Length: 139
Length: 135
Image (cartoon, rainbow over all chains, first blue to last red; front, side):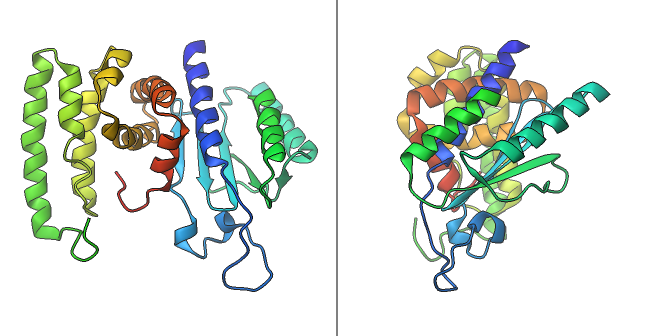
C-alpha cells in the first residue's frame, strides 16, 4: 500500500522534473504581450502532450505543459468528511502561501477536483529549484 | 518519415489491424512459453505504425498491455531491451497510467520508475514532446 504511494510520487516527481523545462516566450500574435500558453492554447506547436498519472481510480494527477507554463491538476482521495475538510484546508494553504511560484489560476478543470496553475516567466534555475523543493514538502 | 503521404488511409488501416492481430497471436504463444520479455519486444516492434487511426492505436495498445502485465522481472526486462525501444515503452506507460485501472497502474508505475533510472529524464521529455507519433 505504502509502496504504491511511493512509486506514484516518484513517477509524478520525475515527470514534473522533466516537464518543468520552461522558458520565457512572448506571445506570437500580439507584440509585447506574454501569455501563458497552456491556458490559451492559441498555437498547437507550443503545447506538449498532457499526461495523466493514476494511482488508482480515485487518485490522479494531470500535467499539461507548454513552452512557458505548466498546469498541474490533482485529484486526491477523499473517503470521508474529515479528509474532505483537510484537503480543502491544504489547498487553501497552497494557493495563498505559495510565493515561490506564481500561481495564476485556481479554478478546477471539468471533473478534476482541484487545480493549481503555475507560470514561470523567466529562465530562473534557482527559482525552479526552490519550487521543486517547496512542492516536495507537501508531497 | 516522408513529409507527404506519411500517414495511411482507411483501407490500409485494415491491413495494419490484421498485422496487429497476427502479432498478438505470436505474443500469446510466446507468453505460453513463459518468455514475457520476448513478447514485449515483439509487441513494441513495428509500433506505432505511423497512423492516425484510433482503432489501430487501440488494437496495438491492447497487445502491448497484455505483454506488459505478464512481466514479473522488471530489471531483467529493461536490461535486455534495446535503447531504441525506451521512448516507445515510455509512451505506452503513460497511456497505461491514464487508464486508472489499478493493476495496470501498479505495473506501469513500477516499470516507469526503473525505466526513468535507466533512460533518464530525456526519455520522459521526448514522450511528452512528440505530438506526431502518439500511441
